[in-house]
Image (cartoon, rainbow, N blue to C red; front, side):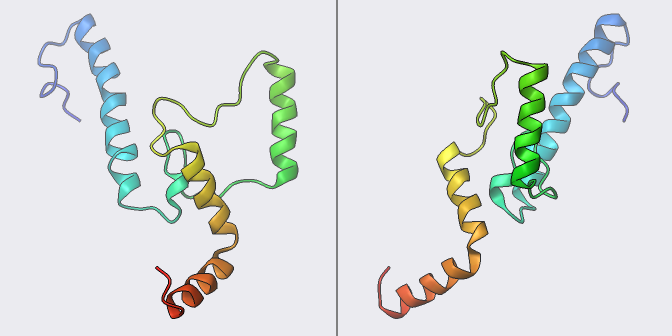
Length: 117
């Protein structure tokens, strides 16, 4: 990428600014654009997330949290940040429905057949 288009002055301050700006440009391109064009499961498309990674087993989740507790005893496991695109409750609902997709689909077919909208 030719940074002279963005920052025509190549001095120490310009290089630092280019590095700071490039991460923001990358985030905008991936998190705010690509994640809204490709989403096999919308609740996975969050900042720092990977839509190709569909989670871990319950045992692995608990093991990782035990390690976190040992390494960072005063840390917090956050489920939302200022960059979160959807609320925690919306993501929880989407993820829950993804685990019972067949049953959810059948319930909707029945509901529509009964005329319930």
